[in-house]
Length: 507
Image 1: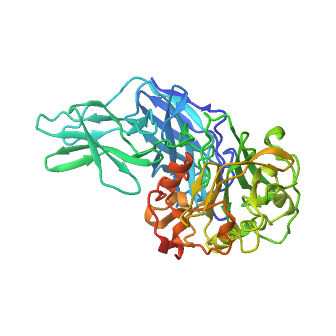
Image 2: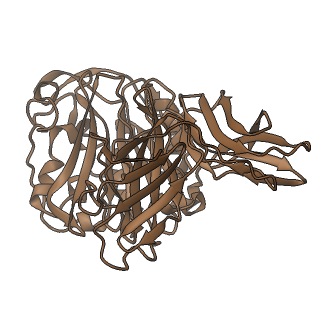
Image 3: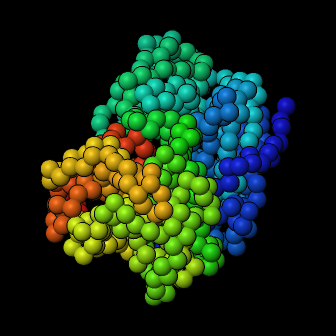
């Protein structure tokens, strides 16, 4: 019996924006709610859009879906190559897990980036695997569930009943590097499962179900999952709040110390949609920003000027923020996302003067002319390309020694009208962009070979004044994840987080 389901999954509206890249979308502007026609474990998906005639004809469209098990969303897989019928798109999913809830979004990859619908939930019925094709192995759609820091459960339906000898197995590897590992499963028609362990935290893996028969290897479609991050933070799911924001760090819901705000530009739009300004994670314990994530592009940098509109962030509890713009502890007010990087309008600039975007930085040799941090910021400005560049600017509060041998130890200082502010021991900038810099493509649609990402790390120390940027301060994103406990660029599965080349950055 077929069931048609159009259940809106509240609270999971996805938003997009960036100049020359993603837009801010609730989904209702361009898409109606996806419809799922369920027939056992085969599901027909369709979604009507409000795009004009012909817009979708030469566009990458499809659906992105994931299991929902115990109220937890699994890894998303894309179904590309969907059929376009006027202003609608359609696709068929086969071999899904029986009697399982799924979350699905429709998407379209426009020249300005990927836009996505609101989510809908459907539940599959009982297993309705078709009769096996005796001529060759047949596969359903692979899925991953129960993903942790080091473990994952893979599943995929399989159909083949030949009596000859053959092998069936899952193969998997990190998307950015490495060779395939395999886990052998039983032969014969049915749902195949494999439990993986010993995985690397904070890593995106690709996998598929394979069958070796008659001297050939047959494979299912490929799917991916991302392990959660290792380190002191813990609890990261790898799922950022908005899947279309490449710079976004997943919320650590297990850490009650962290408070988040997602700031949208009040009067600056791109393609008719309000652009995002920045996202901040702020610590109640340290009374200081933990990280600020933001896109960088020339469109944010017009000539509205600096507002100096210091004030508390209205989206984060006032009692954990600074109480005034006063300084102390030998520090001045250091912007995480700089004022000059957000001067497209006065209202946009005022947002970067929220106290949640301010950290104490030493005034004599760090956040001053020729200071260690200012030197790095100026250098990063020169790496912002025509394509959007994505940055995460962060702090660290444990004892730290950087590549130059400069050290800092934890301490509390009086700052911003408080006497209990943690003085960061290190600041970092994690950066992601295209290698070429002028591809006109979203990083979400780039291969690993087209991308580069790395972290630049400097201790909070006055001794770095005048220090030029060198490879000594570079760190892979994977190593930064291990150090900080945060997961970076999880929305970009092909980001080469485990490696970098100093020469790609001109060093």
